[in-house]
Length: 574
Image (cartoon, rainbow, N blue to C red):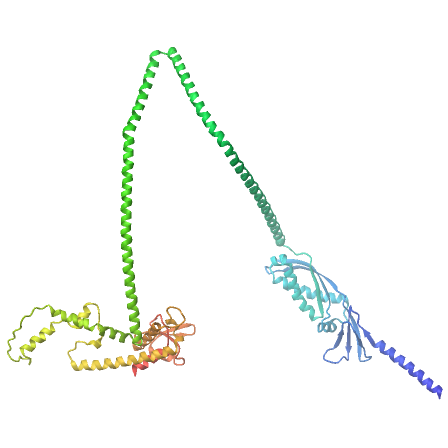
């Protein structure tokens, strides 16, 4: 019995070791320079699982594995004749270093597409991809950027190539552009131009430095000479004064010596030459000297006093002229000051009048007709006074009337006389017309038909009432919608004062009164542009869906919402 147990124990131990050896044989570790690809029954959506580092258990029958080498692969790209953006063929030999990517997702692409490929086949695949992408990148760049901006060229190549390499599981490690040439010699010419520019700039800088050195040296030497000259000038000044005195003394000595020598030579020549010729010459010289002395005498006696007198007269004349100029200038300044004071006073009066007129219009609720009526009413006593003056100077001591009864028109002679006398007075309307003032019709009109006059008066009252109601309605609307009439903000202070609001109300009522005018032209805002012209009836159809559409009458400087004009129109027509 013990032998059986021992045999079973030994068998169990051996089986355990066999199982452990089997498990160890199916457990695969992944080196750091390789990617472990497990394929077969791996579960999930993928066809394989990739491991970089670590280890995995490989189930027999159901799974298998392979390694992919991560060693970088250098690829020489001899790209020749690639067209640049200017259609210039460029040669760009370069070396690319690629390798299998270890990023999740991209490793699986490598496992799916290159698991059984050799290293040479992978290099050929990558070379084809790089060739195509390099041609695409070079075709999008000008040759100047290709030659001068290598960093941009490499960046563009990396961005274009990397995307395509990722599709097959590769990663771009490095790009080395060896040299860039072209068959036409354009790049070589650019290099020569850059070299010549650099040489010229260096020569310019050297010349500028030499110029600065020479300027500094010259300035130092100039300062030295100036300072030395100043020091020497002080020391030599005394010597010069002494030399002047010595020179004056030597000049006097030479003059005396010359005179003595001249006399001696003259005496010798007189003795040697003809006596009469010398005498005539001496006499001629004497006459010349006497004429010269006489001329100098005349200058001293006549010309000099005359010149002095001339200067005296000129001085007195200039003094008188200056006196006159200053006097006139003082008078002009006084007149100007007086006129400025009068102008300021007149300006103050006009300013106060303008403020008073504004207050009158504001008190009349912004209705100019009511303000005009108030001002004309205020002036009526003066107008009547002017009418009375027409007969105030007539000297009528007594009037004798011979009454002969009623005339053919039913009036007596006395009545005709008084009527004629009153008719001689200048009518009020004619009087104001002569001074340029047209009185409103509500102050009266001359009519032959009293009944027709009464009818016109009633119509005028009714029309005035309707217009006044239109003013009130539009004023209420403007108060509530001031933000819609910004075109009346004349002083650009982003708000409407009373005067600007009154102008808006007056404009709306005036347009409403002109709506029936066939010659009137209406415009309306349509998007960012204006449409028109059109008649009032057509305008109502165009803006019926949006009553706040801005409208304009006869190309006025103002724009108003249609709602404001239509509100005034309804008030006037009702």
